[in-house]
Image (cartoon, rainbow, N blue to C red):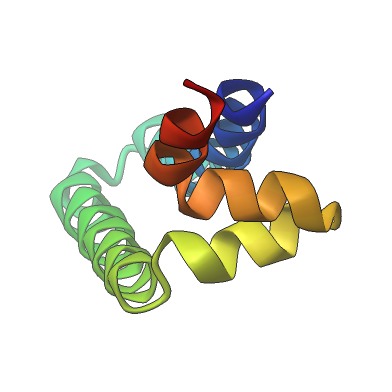
Length: 99
C-alpha cells in the first residue's frame, strides 16, 4: 500500500514537470514554424534560446521547491489517510513492529 501511494505521488509530481515542459515545447515549435514559413530564419535561434532559458528557469524553481518541501509536505498534499501517511513517513519502524 505504501509503495502504491508513493508511486502515485511520484507520478503526479512528474506529470507537473511534464505539462510545463510540453507547453513550452509546443509554443516554441509553433513560433519556429511561423517564422520559418515567413522566411524569418534569423529569429529561430533566439526563439530556441528563450524557450530553453524559460524551461531551465522553471525546472530550477520547481526543483528548488521540491528540495525545500520534501516528502512529508508532498505526502500531506496527496494523501488524507493518517495511517498511510504515518507508514509512508516511517516505513522501517512499522516493518520492524510486524516481525
